[in-house]
Image 1 (cartoon, one colour):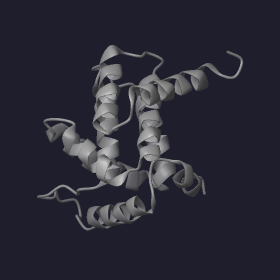
Image 2 (cartoon, rainbow, N blue to C red):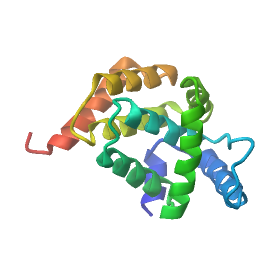
Image 3 (cartoon, helix red, strand yellow):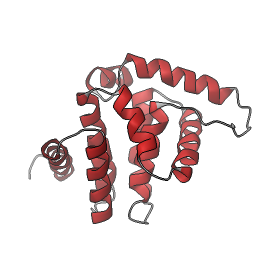
Image 4 (cartoon, rainbow, N blue to C red):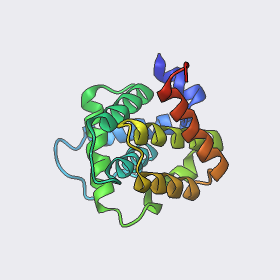
Length: 171
């Protein structure tokens, strides 16, 4: 499947698959009730930071949300309903977060250098989804990259990779 191919080359490993399964079990057991303690999961942290980038410029573009949904559903091999459950948990956490550390600390503990770099690539895909790069989005990706230990050089390379992909092979 696409998800298993991505996990070999993407920003997650086996440990996160087990954590995501725990998250799904937790969410399925809620039966519609809001939990007193939010699930402490890397997957939710990834989605919450992506939402933070989507909201950075004050304009929530449908294309940005579509990129997020497509990438996360393919990566985690989620149904629409499972994605919506994860998204709801991420939104709750993102809205109540006072800073980025709550999410970046989870990513630092769970992802290796290559996976962190791929995550920054995902954030750049979201930034460029609406074809309007904004300085607030740029700054936020820079800040997240800094907090998870992705160098400025690598962050810029990932941005340039996404820009080249968006322009196509004839550019």
